[in-house]
Image 1 (cartoon, rainbow, N blue to C red):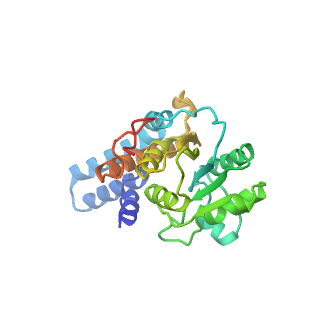
Image 2 (image 1 turned 30 degrees about the vertical axis):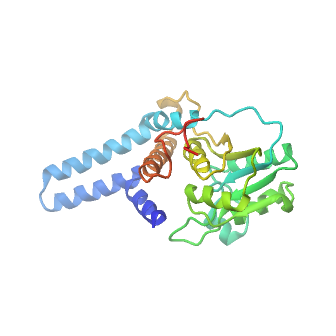
Image 3 (image 1 turned 90 degrees about the vertical axis):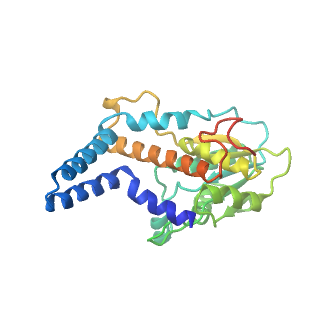
Length: 267
């Protein structure tokens, strides 16, 4: 139920959709002669779109998330590498049978790089189908085709293909891997997603070393360096992740609103 409610909520509150709904509400209000409601809906919609596309709002919102877990020095020994799903084009790969990557594809590419650096480490791909309205293929189903093509042998892969969100990533991976005390596991996911992901894995009893990738900002953005389409994407991602943190905190799935190194899990 949590999965479906979160998908439904996000459909309505993501900036572009929210602005469209406000414009539609303003249009309906105009049809009934409600000038104040028309003006309010239109102004708010334009404000949301302008702030999301023409300002550094998205970068300001996402930078604290991306900076929360700096990439550490590589450990001398790594027992396993966990890469969270989200970097592969699920609907396209389900139909065409390839391994098309998306904007978060750094996750799976970094897993391949780390696999070469640590040739005895297990590689866990955690991610099932997350599509609600279309057929899709989880990263744990697509990922092996890409990683084996890049030289990672199939016997090193551990596939978790049931999870639909980060909470399930942590729970199902912990059940599948059963990590032993003293082992070192790298957690590979997008930098903005690392606070929530690390907190959930720690809470599930699976301590990891955060290995952030897929940065969306340099920390030096300004209006001139953020084209409108990029600004909207960054703002949308930031809003989604902050909503995720608040929701997981209120539901008790993480113990702190803004998890960080050494303070984020309760695990």
